[in-house]
Amino acid sequence: MNSIQGIAPQTIPRTIFKSSDFIWYGLGAATLAMLFIVSRHNFLLFHGMAELFSIAVAWAVFMLVWNARSYINNDALLLLGSAYLFIGFMDLLHTLAFKDMGFFPDAWSTNLPTQLWIAGRYMEGLALLLFSLLLGRRIHPLIGLTFWAGLAAILMGMIFFWCIFPDCHLESIGLTPFKIWSEYVICLVLLAAFGILYRKRAMLDAKVYRLMAGSMAASVAAELTFTTYLGSLIFPISSAIS
Image 1 (cartoon, rainbow, N blue to C red):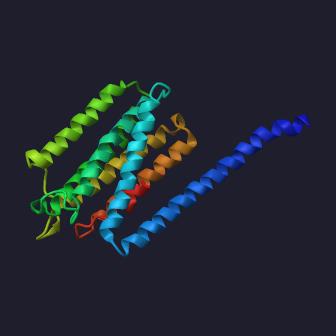
Image 2 (image 1 turned 90 degrees about the horizontal axis):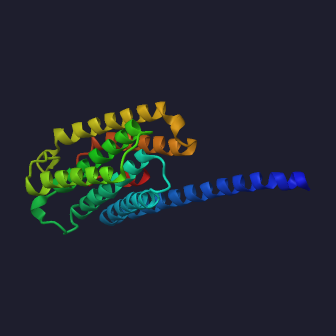
Image 3 (image 1 turned 90 degrees about the vertical axis):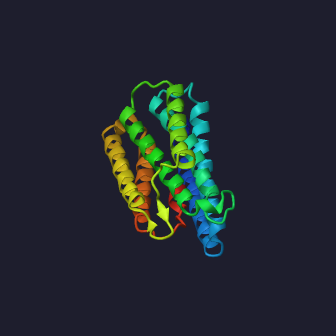
C-alpha cells in the first residue's frame, strides 16, 4: 500500500498534464478551423475576430505578468509582458483602421493599418530581443513600462501627428519597399532573439523555452509571407498563433 501511495502522486499529475495539453491544442485547432470558415464568407469579420483574439492574448499576458510581479524573479519576463500591453494597443488601432471598418476617415486608405501593423511588429521584435539579451538581469518594472509607453507614443506620433512614418502601402504600387524590407529586418531581429535565447535556454523552464521558440518561428514565417502580399488585407491568423 505504501508503494502504491508513493507512486500515485507522481502518476496522476502527469496524466492530467497531458490531457490538459491535448484539450488546449484541440481548442486551438478548432478555433483556427472556425476562423478559416468565417474567412471564406466574411473576411472583415474574420480579420476582426483573429486580431481581437491576439489582442486579448497580448493583454492577458500583460495582466498575468504584471499582477504576479511580486512573485516573479525574472525581470526580463516582466519587461516582455509590459511590452504586450502596448503591442496589443497598437494591434487594436490596426484592427480599427482596417479597410471598411469605418473608424478612421477614408483618406487614411490602406496605408494606415499597414503602418500600425509594422509598428507593432517592430515593437514585438524588439521586446523579444531585449528579453533574450536581458534574461537574468535586474530591471525595475516601472522602467520597462515607461520605456514601452514612450516608444508606443513616439510611433503613434510619427504615424498620426507628425506624419513622418514611412508609407507601407500605396494604392498605386501596393506594398512599398520600406514595408517589404521592414519584414526582413523584423525576421533578422527575431532570429537574433532566438539565437541568444537558445544560448540561455538553461535559464528557462524547458516548456517555456519551447513555446517561445515556436512563437518566434511562427512569427518569422508570417513576416516572410507578408513580403509577397500585394493587397492591403493582411492575413492575421499568424499573429494569433504566435
